[in-house]
Amino acid sequence: MVKLGSHVGMGGKEKMLGSVKEAISYNANCFMIYTGAPQNTRRSDISTLMIPEAHELMIKHSIPLENVVVHAPYIMNLANPEEEKRQFAIDFLTSEVKRTSLMGAAQIVLHPGAHLKQGSMEGMKHIVNGLKKVIENTSDLNTKIALETMAGKGTEVGVNFQELGYIINNVNSDRITVCFDTCHTHDYGYDLSDFESVLEEFDKFVGKDKISAFHTNDSKNTIGSHKDRHENIGFGYIGFDNLVNIINHPEFINVPKILETPYVTEFEGSKNKVYSPYKHEIEMIKSGSMDENVLNKIRE
Ligand code: FE
Ligand code: FE
Ligand code: ZN
Image (cartoon, rainbow, N blue to C red):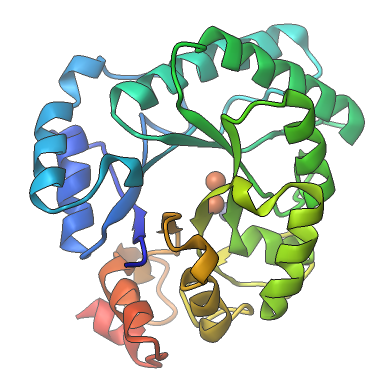
């Protein structure tokens, strides 16, 4: 059975238990959470996250622990040109990896970093050093750090398979894997209508077996736009068939696929994003055929 879910909240009173309930309400069998707000470093005490209760509910609904994906916050940058800020990123990522492990999740997804005009090579070297230190700091754990493929916005590093391959080969740890974001790879310039060729290219520089998670999003922009704006499944430039083809790919059946598609607005043209699309998107993906009317169903 394909592992399909979405990112879910953890902010409510019930914390991780609330996350599991949200995932179940979408008929998802995997999900992704942030260990706290993605934009800051404030974290509630691990003992308040209702982890045992969350695990119990997962067992009841046959959601294996290995299907939980954590996403690291955006505010840390292992590639920062300032040493102090790199050290902050190393320390904070270390504590986030430990939290990930305590939550029972197998992996934490990380945006590799931004070189901030030092050049990609400098940035990549900092990332390699930073990751080596984090792996060392958590050597008693087997939590994976999944580097996300990036769209090539601003000075992002890890935007193509060559760069990801450079980082991964130089850190040289089986705990470093990849989270393949379809919107990002498309926005960078990879043509996902020919996924087999993209995969071949990926295999050449990184290795197919390194993919430990997918973010399956459509894109609001054309291929190579470097924009990174997610779209609902089937309503963007990647398209329903290409996304379903990736989600059902036989080589990645055991890899969690996470939707990060946007919430749907109250009515067309409104800016108020109020309806979660995930239950209906999951249903549509499982059915295998595009429903042009799905946005209206989500609004019901
Ligand atoms: Fe991400
Ligand atoms: Fe993503
Ligand atoms: Zn994105």
